[in-house]
Length: 338
Image 1 (cartoon, rainbow, N blue to C red):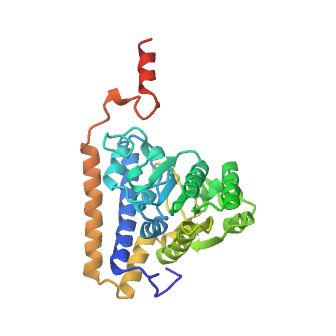
Image 2: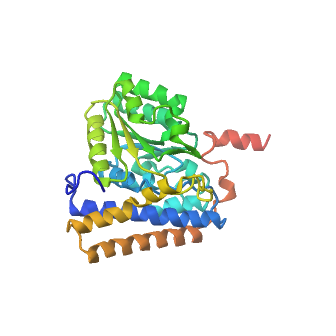
Image 3: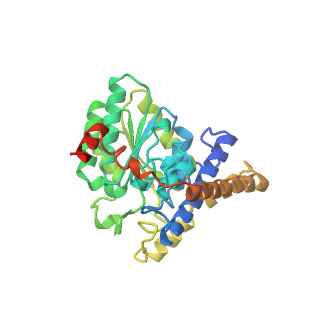
């Protein structure tokens, strides 16, 4: 960790422990999901989040249940940060009935309304207008909550990104745009598709506060997200946060990523979020080795439990194939009998 050295951003020991736990669970579940995808045991594609764990933990430390999030398909850490259970996430990846979307959506359609994990979209850049709509509704209803939308660096080249940024700034909507800049748009390096790689600088043209943050640093990330969320809740309008990190694996859980420069990947692995946060917590005497080992034991147990639960869960009932798809079940039944 490079920034905010020696400072805990006002987080209690319990909050720091939960951040480390969330980072570990995200890392462990991510790596195991990739192995399951390669073995052909998942019912959907899997999109790794390795390298993004610090930002996910920061969101978990700041966001309340009343805040709402719209995420992307690379969403394991986002969903955990918003309070979704790992059991429900893994059951969805295995295509099982207790999954977040009944086992019928996979990572492209994770959602849990009870915790404010409102929607996921598999279309690059399409989560932004959904989040802007939620922010507009929040403003019109006079509610004090933040709407957060996460997206990759590649989404900043999509038309809906620019429309959403412009609309949010014009109406001063309570939204936080979180760009998880992992340096790659699928298989294309950012410098090969963006003439200006400083995305926060580009976003500033929409007359909203912007900031470029070390996305490997959970403390710096917490500070930035907290400030933006508090601004949104207080009616201060939108914020764009660009979190700089690096994708530590392929675009999907089964994808080859030999095209990634080996020196860049090695340098990024030196900053692997969870191990570096452990070192930071230990060096400052916040937790001793026994306490850290216990957090790690609990994280591994939670991951083992979630995968065991998912594999043992039933598949969806074929009779439910039309549910959650069409708004009027009676109309669907009438078509079947026509």
